[in-house]
Amino acid sequence: MKINNKIKNRTKKSNKKANIPIETMIVLFVAVISVALLIGLFSSKIPGFSKALYCKTIYHIHSASFIPSSIRQSQTYCEKNSSMYTTILDGADKTSQVESITAFAVACWKLSDYGLKQNNFVCYNVVVPETTTTITIIRQDVVNTLNKNNLAEILPSKELDVSTLKIVPKSHLIVEYIYNKAKKEGTVKIS
Image (tube, rainbow, N blue to C red):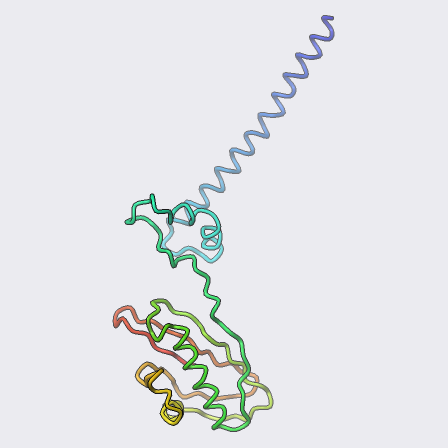
């Protein structure tokens, strides 16, 4: 009987010793994760990974209505911008390519709620096929196409930022919406 009690006591003690390191490891793991999250939250620029982690975890608590509005994260902070499309530039000649580029610009302007969105985003990644001949498109080509197709009412030419575009096979064009916070206006940029 005494032997059985000694075995039970030793088993209890050994179980406690084994549990302490596991519990300590769990506490340390949680502490390290917490410190990493806090450092990420208080840094001036949260890297993409930290932002993704934040948006999947703490954001839902931090943006809750019981948090004071002065420290509450904005509701748009964790919105995903899924508006970017990859597409292929249509047209074999300059006129049809300018029409395609103009259509992408108008579509981007519509995605921006006609210039009302207050964040920058890429609308289109336009892939130029290798069968395309090298051409140059200037801003006036796009403005003329807007006017010719009565699209200037939708996308005014003053809201269009187009530098001289050299269309080269196997290249890309980016059609993006840029919001200028100082001027409180947006533009569609093609580059």
